[in-house]
Length: 321
Image 1 (tube, rainbow, N blue to C red):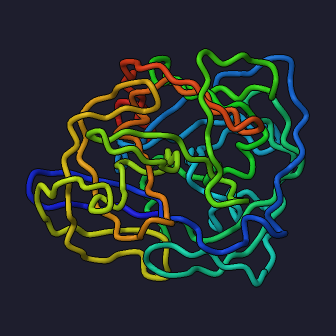
Image 2 (image 1 turned 180 degrees about the vertical axis):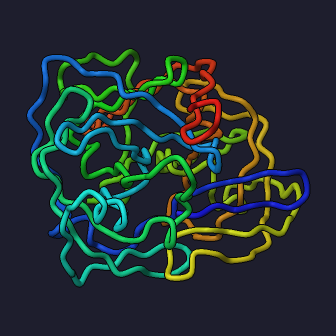
């Protein structure tokens, strides 16, 4: 996961790099068992003073009290911050697992959390990867808040995930309990990948991109799609790796006509990602932030409506306090 801070007109993109390792499919990070509640409880979406582009969610966990989690459909496995778990008295253990990002690899520890109350449902003893999140990713660390971890795909795939920007909430539904309006099919990343891909049209160029709420911008192989280069700018990138900063030249391509399935959204700038035809790009918050979106993980379907997003509260700011 990384931020690209672009110099020229102030502009920030955050994208989540694909996790190229197989640790999301192997212990100690399995998909947990869930006891579903009668109805979903709305989870408030918030943002941080240092990150007002992406989504964080406040969770009243039960045994561990209220926690702040980063919401990220582009993260293969749920990940906890080492310092946050130490403060909560949750023990961690060594593993041989590593995660790979754009800026290198990071060794992971593991932890088993107490049962987690999540949006009206009980997630039984979820296991999470453990690392220093502020030191090895783009998740910030600032006064007035502590980010417990990243709510990733291995937990989210147990639900029909509803992101409602107009109401500023996240709802997690039991599979089979909601009927999607005009659903369309999603694809897995690769054959067995946990992340899901959606059909997108960019200036009439058709492609499939990973649904990535952890990315502030959209990031793809623009040259392969024939999108014309608009400008190049230097940028400082922060992301997953033992060193979480890098300076690069960003190739930015403007897209005027953006369609997510059958829903049109606003024009965007995308960052070129030279990854080839077999590595999908990332569809980020510049598009997803305008959509009331249902993601039915078990059935690999989605439905979307264009909405006007609500201004979210900022945790840690004087106004929020």
